[in-house]
Length: 107
Image (cartoon, rainbow, N blue to C red; front, side, top):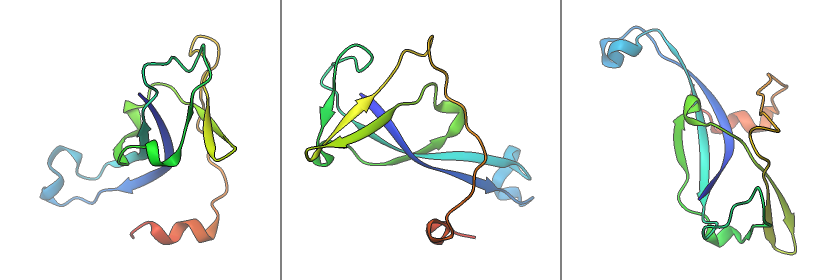
């Protein structure tokens, strides 16, 4: 199975006892979407899938992500762009935010 991350959220928790050991902390959360590869290794073979073949989206701590992939749409399907972690390392850089994308994030 391969997971494609869609968005990264910054969640700043206040000092309420509700959060226990996370009081006052900032969490980085990733919205990810898993999809099936039917056992094919995308670093060595071409893997294509249709949007209908994705599984339910999940939110997880960003620290759980150990590698990243890309995807390319072609002929109504998506192709996975994956490279071996020993050769390519993902980096996350702060960039500009499109104001229209902020509307789905709760304050």
